[in-house]
Image 1 (cartoon, rainbow, N blue to C red):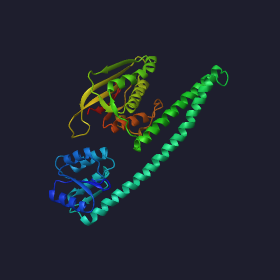
Image 2 (tube, helix red, strand yellow):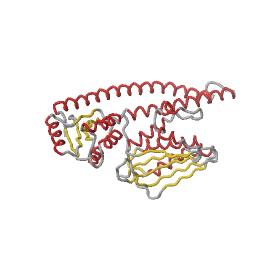
Image 3 (cartoon, rainbow, N blue to C red):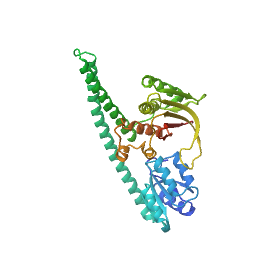
Image 4 (cartoon, one colour):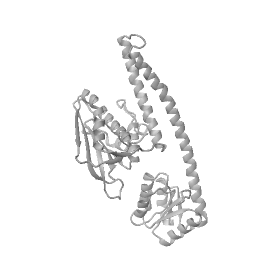
Length: 368
């Protein structure tokens, strides 16, 4: 297969039309694959990324809108072009709202098809270049901010140790307050740098074979002091005989750290944090068959999350959308970074909560 060619998937249950478009595009230098129904199209996108997917709106198995939703969620680089009859124009408009780049009415004008597809890819590549430049600029800016602030934090540490002379109690109190404030800023900058890298696609997973139960135990051990000092009851349940998994242990530890930090923050004194690792069959996408995963859950007996806020938990702009109470100390970026990490592992992350009954954060990693 020539990787420089534009990769196209055509999904249409009309064999004649599909074959005609495929032959025309192949003659023009495109690399083309075909699917005769919606489920076949979804299956092909699970094993390969395409530059463009030409989707008929009305197909058996899964219609074009269902395929569109799946592709936009799982293969953001794939541009979607819908094919529709005149009676389906309202559905085509709906497809545009869901992220389709264009819709073509049947019969397809073959002379116009090739330049249309090439223009779509050229526009996508130009947007990608702009996005990469923006990401690189943001990353440099965050790094330039992080270094002097970290240096300031270190200097205050020297003062607190008396390396520049003795300090009074009031001076120590003020420097301690400054240290805590700087730590919050450093934490925010670190989360922002992680998120920028993940969204820029510049972070590669360093996967190895590991035991998820052991990784969870190690992460929990790091939180023993804050949990005990807050008089929180800790429960840890590891299902026996957990299968070895392939994952990036450092990044999964980062997810666990975010989950546990969130749990400690929102659990009252005498409350409970319960962590569980178990095997379960998980459906990642609607229409898919259940697949075996190992699931980690972190429950806290805090106040819970209002139902209307649950869909915004993993939205980086949730504070702008819903407002942020004075009691909330976290930016929430850690959870968004966690989502990107789990999705990079082809896993699933979600939250369940009830007011006055507590909150549980979950993530699932596939068992290969």
